[in-house]
Length: 207
Image (cartoon, rainbow, N blue to C red; front, side, top):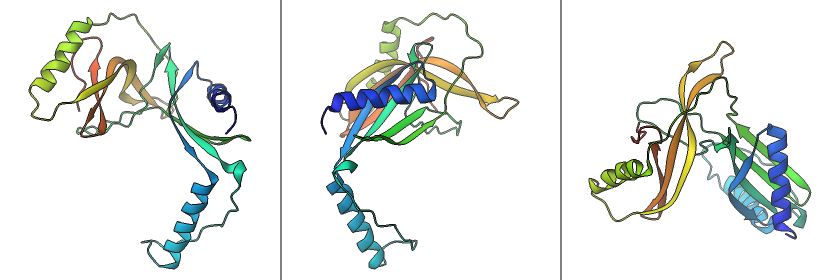
């Protein structure tokens, strides 16, 4: 596409405006050509004809064109100047962690699809003090010194809000303690994983 950066910036501003976010930042993007999507449609049609799907279904055939070249964009929203958790969290204790997910599909014709879940509003806030980074890094070091695994590569350290649910309010919406946390991203066996450490006390947020 022409003017890729301009197109993505316009998409980002639209997402921020429509969702009334104070700020959003692009976290990842994927590009798709109309030829790829046309091929995918053909494969789906063939699978249906061959009875390869567990659940029978029909698809509406679409005539793809250059105008359908698109980007799939993922954004992270901000609250009180700090990015909010946007990664899926699966805890062993089944506590629901409502990560904020924002994604959009954009073509040269504009936004074609937009999904945003778990938008937050501040009801109460109080000043806090963050633990020294040495304490944070010591927690991280101890975690992996005890692990029996191949070497890992840390490639990101970011301060975020980690929403810890405390129940629902009178309207049924989730209430959360927005815990400042250091999000560490690391690669092990070519798979990206995350570790979260409470930025207030330096303990790992485990579940």
